[in-house]
Amino acid sequence: MSRRIFDRRGRANWDDDTRTREDRRMQDRRSSDRRQSERRVAERRQHKESVSVEMRQGNDRRLAERRIGDRRVLVESEPPPPPTGPLIKEILGEPTGGVLGIPATFTFRQAMNFLAGHNIGLAVVLDENGKMAGVLSERDVNRIIAENGEQGLSMEIDKYITRNVFTCSSQDSIKEVLLAMDSRKIRHVPVVNDGLLVSMLSVTDIVRYLASREDS
Image (cartoon, rainbow, N blue to C red):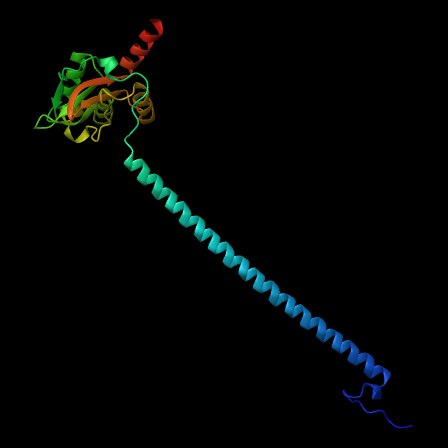
């Protein structure tokens, strides 16, 4: 009996074990090639989707920036809306500009006497040119006394006043000013028209005005 010779070109010459082994090897190779092909296809698809997402996000971002720019131009080009509801001038009437103030060189004792003498809780502090430099409240006086005792009354108020004061005008809405006072936790607001200090507004003034409207 002649011995069969393994020959790829002559499958008929293979014995059964060789044929089975070669068939399994070819199936494994085809399976491996198919898996690699599927993996490459999946990677290409994932890359395309990633690029598509990045492009879409970039387009969305540019579109959002253009919309923001359009809104900014629109806001800057349009005049502010007129105030709604009653105005501050309805509380104060016609301001006369006679607002009492104290110089920044006052001591805390002098400021305390000024507040007590006029029965007010806040005083406007004026600089050497007569312009508003800030404000001083009775709470500021109490804090200095608590921190320094009676010696604090001899200290000048200039370094302790509140600067960058929130102000309103007589043409502002009462509602908007009241909301601003509430958010800033303040009880008094200087009223400034065209750079001129014309009056002082307090929460008490607003409450009295609103109460009178309800009664009428």
